[in-house]
Amino acid sequence: MKMIKKNICLTLLGLVLFIGLLGIGDCQTHTVSAAINNYQDDRVNLNVKSAIAVDAKNGQVFYAKNADKKMPIASMSKLITIYLTLQAIKDKKISWEQEVTPTKQMVKVSKNPDYSGVPLELRHKYTVRQLYEATLIASANAPAMLLAQTVGGSQVGFVKQMQNQVKKWGIKNAKIYTPDGLPNYTQGKDAYPGVGKNAENELSAADMAIVVDKLVSEFPEVIKTTKIAHKDFNDQGKITSMENWNWMLKGLSQYDAAYPLDGLKTGTTDAAGACFAGTMIKNGRRIITVVMGARHQDGSDPSRFVQTKKLLNYVFSNYQLYIMKKGQKIDGVNEVAVPNGKQKTASLVMQKDTGIWIANGKHITAKFSQDNIAAPIKAGQKVGYFDVAAIPSIKDKDGVQLPATVTQNIEKANIFVRVWRKIFG
Image 1: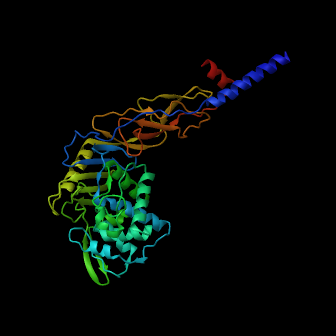
Image 2: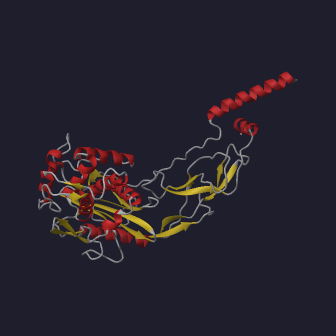
Image 3: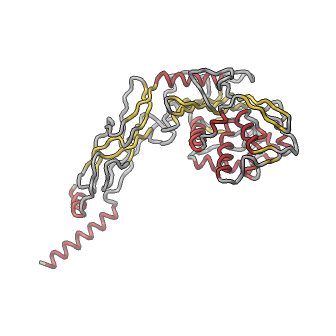
């Protein structure tokens, strides 16, 4: 009898080890997808080549038109340059009051009437703060070039940092050649090697929304500068008046109290047309818009701002912010399997209050992000997400995500119960 019991124990032990190798109780990811490229593009007729509007907090996409198509981004490129500059200051690699001098090519670019800029002088010294403000407010190209050289040691070195940074953000197939967004040939001897003289930086509208999101979420202080409508640039007593190219700021020609933008960046080249990445707060949430390839008849054409207003009007007229409450159930998901728990299933509810924008007259349903979860689990512990697959997000390929928890503690079943379930169901 003892020998029989011993053999049974050995057999069970072997089964346990075998089943352990199979990963009993392991969570399995539920795969869904949500398309961004032309989401709701038939709801508003924008006279642009591509566009997107998103909520920065959860990445929710309200509208997209050709949003995955790579296109020239012109001076919106400077947002990546500013991000890396702020990162270098944070890491104490450079400082705000550090003084640097421009090269002959930078001075040449700064005085070219075809480019937006602030004139720099050879052998004059400029602080990083001056260059930062000129880059953001006046979209000045030479200051952006000088920031790049200061941070990266050389412009080419800095451009490689830009390329690496967008890869870290999950942006694929980006074309980044200059720190200012001008065509490659304008950089003189600092032109990026191995590409054509007319090569320009290219990202998609969705990519640009990611860039804006990363910048304003990690360095929210940037808004203090992007919302400045006018400021003087003092070069050893010579004053250059800078006016922000974002004409939607208060005090400028396209300001509208219904859309109180506090940033962010325009961009214009012959290849890009008129571009604009804008942002503002609505109901406590930061909204990001990007329009690319708007009409640009001349330097006084407001088309990109007209189209941005049209896009914001669509968002605010058609969406309401709804707070999904802690403990609330979500349609489409009731329970999830717990293969190794004392209870074989668990009820799922919202883990915490979380906002989501819901289109007028619409109702959301979701799927749980995993096919099962593993015990032990405590009530209130995040166990996964409700994936609202019908609403795409720039932050997750599975759509907008709402954090989920279980309604009660679930203990782990003993090994014999787990083995029995694995074998017999």
